[in-house]
Length: 196
Image 1 (cartoon, rainbow, N blue to C red):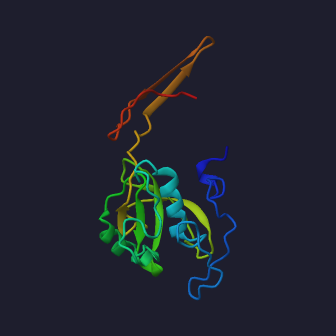
Image 2 (image 1 turned 180 degrees about the vertical axis):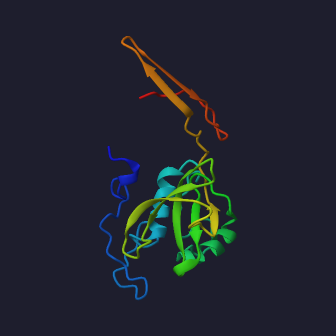
Image 3 (image 1 turned 135 degrees about the vertical axis):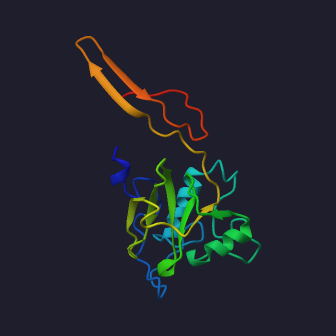
C-alpha cells in the first residue's frame, strides 16, 4: 500500500479525483459535490474527511453545507466558516486536535483536515486546492511557520497514543530483543504494541 506521504486523494477514497479545475473568480467549471460544496476544493476535501473519519463523532449526522445551521444559512465559502461555526455552536480556538479543521483567512480563506497532532506542538494536515488547481498534499506544520488562524472543532476524533520512543533492538542467532519507552497515551488507553 502506498505510504501516507505519497497517497493521493483518490487512493484515500475521495469521490471526485477528476474534478474540473474550478475558477474561483468566475465560477466557471465549478461543480457541486454531494455535501453542497465544490468538487476539488478545500472545503469538499474537508467535508469528505470529516464524514469518512469522524462519522462516530458526528453522531449519525452528515457534515454538509447546512450542518447544524438554521434553514437558509450555509457553511458555503470557507471565508464564511468561522461565522458558520459560531452559529452552529462549534468551538474555535488556537489548539489543534486530531480530526479538527484548520482554517486560514489569507488569500480568500482555506481549510485543511488535521491528520495528526505531535507532542512538539506541530501538526500534519491533508489539504486540497492550496495551489488553486485541485492539487492535493500532506503538510507538516509548525507553530513558528505556516500556521492556521483558527482550529474548528466540528467533531474531533479521540487522540491517539503517541509512538514509542527510545526504540532499540539487538539480535542473535536464535532471537531478538526489542525495547522501547512507553509513549504518552494522550487520553487514550494503550492496549498493546506491534513490532514489525
